[in-house]
Length: 165
Image (cartoon, rainbow, N blue to C red):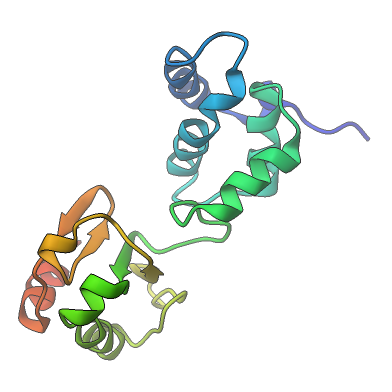
């Protein structure tokens, strides 16, 4: 049985998004767009990547599938299993830890009833531990989607969670 290729797996919108990333690199360096391509495909698939989708990205970018897997498994922004509607990425690195990220984590675990790497039963929230998001001056902090939330307190967390549908 033949393996499906990019043209049978990727949507037209995903291909357009990947093509946008390809314009940023020399035409003989398609593999340079792998991170952007994975983000496009992940977003189109509800926030996570399947092996089939990663294979399609490899096919589209004319690179070995293992090279795509290496990127997807190395960087924390890629998910290899389904995630909740809102992925709460809490930084626990040194600056955030020194400014109370453990209190934020404990509060979220209590409020949501989940631990790092888990998703709420209603599929609304996934809690993820991340190393550094580069906002040390606003520690403790977390990222939800493309938004940073800094100088977190348990009270501020409650306000943020209440605003998420």
